[in-house]
Image (tube, rainbow, N blue to C red; front, side, top):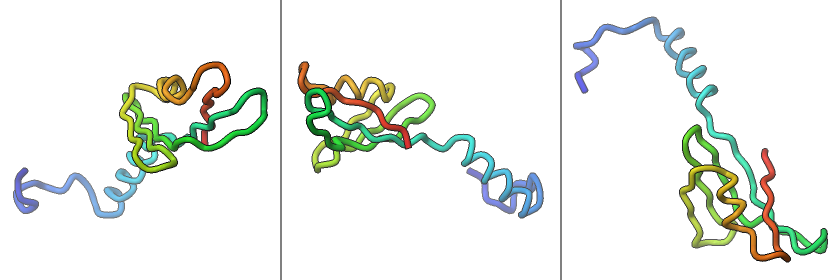
Amino acid sequence: MLADDKLPAMCGEEEFAQLMSEMVAEEAPRFFALVQELGDRVDGRIAAWGMAFENSTEVVGATPGTHLSLRSPESAVRWFSRGEHIQARLVWL
């Protein structure tokens, strides 16, 4: 990358700050929780938290030790479902 003094500024400071704010708002990840439901509404818990980006998803378990990089939030649902008695569900924030 070139030093700042070798490249002309594309606009004024306030306009640039506005452009950066708009870029952040447009590209911000969507946040979600993965809840695990036991049986037919017998019990439930938050199993993980996630961030969905345009082309990838990052998931961190609610208990230490789980970090997944996946293609989609729906992939995480399959990962956290356990047989027929524990089903995972996405809850978008």
